[in-house]
Amino acid sequence: RCALSGRGSYSGVWGSTVQALKAHLAQLGVPYFYESQGIINQASCSLQGDSICSFCARMKRGILYTVCQREGYGVLALGQHLDDQAESLLMSAFHNGQLRVMKAHYRAKDHPVRIIRPLTYVREAATREFASAMALPVIPENCPGC
Image 1 (cartoon, helix red, strand yellow):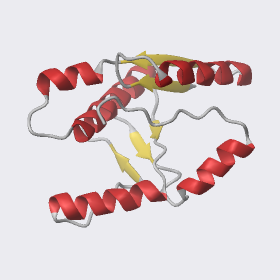
Image 2 (tube, helix red, strand yellow):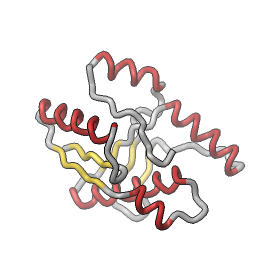
Image 3 (cartoon, helix red, strand yellow):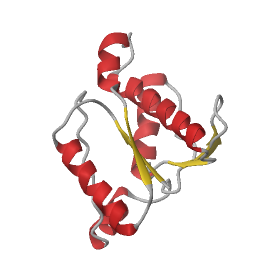
Image 4 (cartoon, one colour):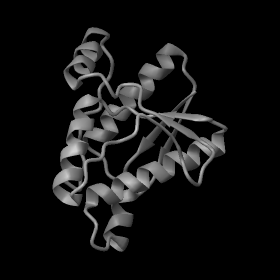
């Protein structure tokens, strides 16, 4: 099964591309469910000192962990790639003074789910080329907080 998670209550690019993804999953016969949360609305009410990006990332992880637990998933595969790891390292160094990256494999502290990042050694360009060659529906970055 596949879980889709929307980031907020807004339309535009996300609304049209999520429909393409749903159609693609249906065509493949992959069962899925769609989970939508108003993260951007929550950020406007409770953001205190953090950046919108870090708030959104924490909220998305929490939602995904909760959905995994609710649906009985034992493993959550995230799509960060090598370029994301490099960006994470630089952000950690410049903003926190530490050399840290996202773990490729770990267990969530408060949830019984194992998190994996199977694309952690794959360059972003390779994922883009693969998606193009396979005619996969791609959801472009369209964060309303940025």
